[in-house]
Length: 242
Image (cartoon, rainbow, N blue to C red; front, side, top):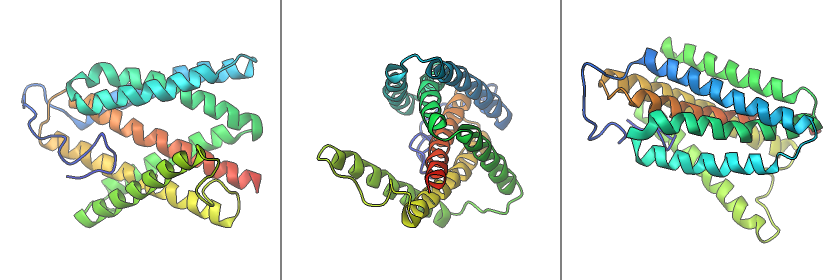
């Protein structure tokens, strides 16, 4: 079992103790995902209103980005703490989501709600397609998504490093046809990661993973959704700029 999402990798269920009385279920993971979504929305709305009330939100955004990254690493390496760290991750990430969304909204009115609707629409559409068996999660499919996600990661990493020297990777931030095309491809890859996440959660339930893995599965799904939302936001901003 393989996933491009670093929190939902193929070795996640290895060496986990089973408890048939308290095992992971799909329904339980869905409930946990909904809780994390509400938590993320609460801090996102707080940062959003802080921005539009004229308050500085830069520190909140960086706390969200940095804190969310640290908590995500802890969750990935110490899965048993997911019932505590997954909600904390959602709260921290909400600061970043709300702040960055507000900044985009100030430039392009209505862009945030468009990105939210497109993200949720993508989630439910791919879930339906997955449940109907239209998309088959084969090993080749998994390898392709993993490879594409890895390539995107290294391009972004190279861009961050180049920015320290006053440069950037060509085209990825531009609003021309090539820049828009790159964003479209990245959005597609991010969306396909959702399919791998669905497969991961289903396999976890089938293998009767420990109950705390519901929180871990919900956390992994939230990681992908946040990434997808940001990429859709970037794509919409390029289209609006053009």
